[in-house]
Image (cartoon, rainbow, N blue to C red; front, side, top):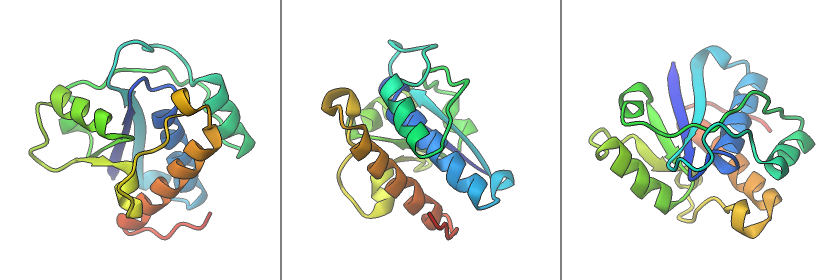
Length: 154
């Protein structure tokens, strides 16, 4: 089983979008037993909050629900619990390394690196463009599954 934790600043937009998109891709491919997927924040400011309404609407437009999500903060113990800790931007990576005490096992990655891109997942909190975030997340999650050896059709 591959355990993937998606991480962003507040755990109400990008990382839960990645969590639920990845779960949807995995479910549609019949691979649920192969994965454990979750998300977390590097900050404490949104702890306990659900997915941000515009992010929830973007997911719903693609037939993906996100009920029951409550933002939580990344903990140092998460490093040993998860196989991959996937951040949305470089600030996330810096904070993930700080919280986890480094990355001795090479588990911390930027989502879009799997898609061969050096850029970051667009942050809709600032851009207001949840469609661009959707596109980035879908591309990154699909590429991550391919990297792990699975061919997924969208």
